[in-house]
Each structure stands twice: as C-alpha cells, then as structure tokens.
Image 1 (tube, rainbow, N blue to C red):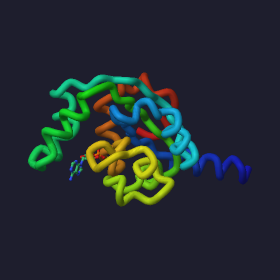
Image 2 (cartoon, rainbow, N blue to C red):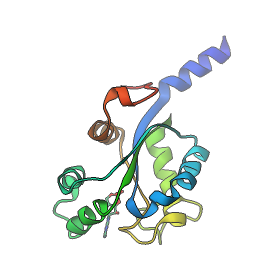
Image 3 (cartoon, protein in one colour):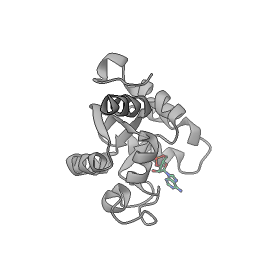
Length: 153
Ligand code: CMP
C-alpha cells in the first residue's frame, strides 16, 4: 500500500518538458540522451525536424528584439534538429540542471552544454525554462497522440 502511494505521488509530481538537440549536436544525440537519463528524465517522444525560417522565428519570438535573433534563426535552420519530450520528476528544473548555463564556457563540468557545446549560440541543446513554456513548446512540435506516456496535461 505504501509503495502504491509513493508511486502514485511520484506519478502526480511528474512533469514534461521540451528539449531540442541543436544542429551541431545531432550527431551526439545518443550521448546527450544518456546525460538526460542520468538526470532521471525519460524521452517519451522524439522526432527529427528541419525547421523552416518561419518556424524558428515563431519558436524564438521572445528573442526577436535581441541582437542575436537573426543569427539564432539562421543557425537553428542550418540543419536538422531533434525535438524531444522529456518526462520525470521536476522535469523542467532537472533538464535545466543537466543542460547547464546557456554559455558553455560558464556551464559546470559534466553538464551537456559544457561537454557538447562550443559557444553561446552553438550550445548543443535548448530546454524549456518554465512549466508554462514547456506546455507551449511541446504543443508547438507535437500532437498529443505522438506522446507515448502522458502523465500531465
Ligand atoms: P536556447 O536555450 O536555445 O534559447 C535561446 C538561445 O539564444 C540560447 O539557447 C542561445 O543559443 C542563444 N543565445 C542566448 N544569448 C546569446 C548571445 N548573447 N549571443 C548569441 N546567442 C545567444
């Protein structure tokens, strides 16, 4: 009974978040997924997409007034990316901890960006920064039926 209650509590606190493996890092997707799994995150949906400029502009619209916006859009459309739905306890925070700081030079050793990123633009992965944005970003790329195990809505 106690085990059941603990499992039910864990399922209730499970979150989903969106991860993008960026063009330069797609060839290292297996290694990056191992970091995510070590952080307690399960990949419950994944697909390779080649973003159009319109998609990249919309996805990163929050940065549209930043000086790096056009370069970011150009980079994110320069080759295929892998979009993934991750699930786990406190998935948004767990993924951000596993990714490390935006700038790989400032990211802690052992984080994805420190180990696979090159610079602040070529930083290997994107991850949702809040649960609210995670829901929006998952909806941007995935239909509900594409997600294998949905524990939160
Ligand atoms: P990401 O998590 O995908 O979210 C926005 C992206 O903008 C970020 O990772 C970086 O790749 C990029 N970015 C953020 N700050 C800078 C910057 N100062 N110069 C260039 N790119 C940046």
